Structures are given as structure tokens and as C-alpha cells.
Figure 1 (cartoon, rainbow, N blue to C red):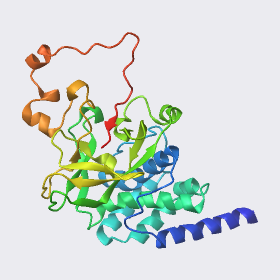
Figure 2 (tube, helix red, strand yellow):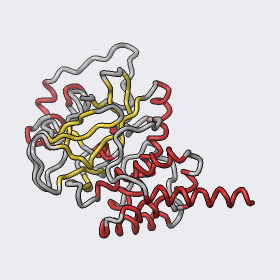
Figure 3 (cartoon, one colour):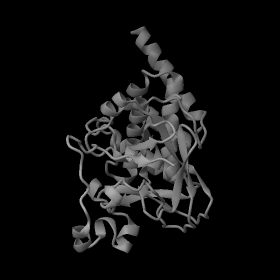
Figure 4 (cartoon, one colour):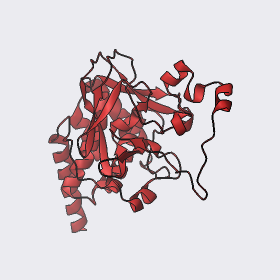
Length: 299
């Protein structure tokens, strides 16, 4: 009994420390494993993003129950207060003190708890007054059941600008980790292919909400275990932050692409039936199987 009380006291002290000593823009490097990053991301998006949009955005583990009982309402209240007051410490402390979150972080070392805290902070930046962008509901893409999210600028950005408070987090995966972590459908948003490392790379954090466009406004720039976002074309408030996923991400020649540019140019999913009929079908090798998820090309 005494040991349990001592552990509870120690955890409470750690939560207080985590809530007071942090940076609004966390370090770009990290030591998270793919499993840790996936869990940290699912919990962070549940607490921060889903609480504002009022629906469940992308998750690596779809079936897991993340919060208990009334904690969804508590998370929503925390985000409402944060957006009004910009009180980072109060938001972090409120999240880490939830029963489900305390039960989750108590098994980690303090350094890992700090990495989880930092991941929450990355998502809180979406709603920072200094971010220069925010997140909105997006009903464009059929793969998401026309219920997804997009990032949009809240001020003017110029070509060459770096969006400091928008980052993607990278983590290389082994083959067995791909099989374990990625579901049979719906996980394509979370994977890039590293040509340098020649392996699949988990791609999460706020950057995972960036949608594809064949004429993108921005580009990914990797720096090891993270990727920042660089502006390619001048943007004004309301413009969507988009990047180019690759030439084959939405099928051969991106034939199934549903981006804004393809809609304007009547290409991809928006091309006429006559154009589709004139296209030669791409043969598959005998015995081959289509991948359960596609890979974004990594710049």
C-alpha cells in the first residue's frame, strides 16, 4: 500500500515537472521506437485534434479505446481553454493528469514521458496563435469516407518560408514492425519510403495531416528523425498546405488522385470515362499481390 502511494506521489511530481519545463517548439530529434511513436500519436491526436474537430481523425490502432468515460468532455474543455488563453502549462498538466493518460505514462521512464509530452506539444502548436496555420475538416477524399482533415494557412506565407510550428516525425521500420503496426487498410497516410535508408518510415505528427496535391504549396524537408515544411508557392490565409506524395501514390500515374489540381484539370479520379477507356490497364505479375497500403515518396 505504501509502495503504491509512493509511486503515485512520484508520478504526480513528474507530471508537474513535465508541465512546467518544456519548449513550445520541441527538439526535432527523438528516440521513440515505431511502436512508441504510433501510441504517442494516437493518444495525442485523440486529446488535441479530435477534441476540437469533434470526430476521430486518423489512427494507427483503430480498435483501441483511448480515453475513459468523461475524459472526452474533459479533453474538449481543456482545448477550449487552451485556444482562448494559450496557457500551455495548464493544457499539458490537464492532459497528463487524466486517469487513462496517467495509467499509460506510468510504465515509461521520465525521458520517454517527456517525449510523449513533446508530441502533445507538437499538436497543441496547431492551435497556437503564432502557428500561422490551423486544422479544419476536409470532405474531399473518398478513402477517408469524406470525413478527414486538412491544414490551412491563417496568414500570408512566402516562397521559401519554413513553417516552424508544423513538423512531421519520422521513425524507420523493420519488416516485422510494418506487419505489426499497419492495419490492412487506412494506414497509407502514415508511411513514407526512405530512398536513403531503403526502408519504410513511419510518418506521424501534425505533418501527417498534410494532404497531397499535384501542384503543392509546400514540400517536406527531412532532417533525420523529423521533417519540417518549406513553402513552395506564396500562400494567403485560407490556402491549404499541401505536399506532393509521389507519382504513383494514387495508383499508376496517380489515376485515382482526388486533389484540387486534378479536379481543375479533369485528371486523376476526375478524368472523363472516355479517357479512362483509352488507358491501357497495367498488368500484374503472376502471383503478385497489391500492397495493403501505398508509400509516399520521401524527398
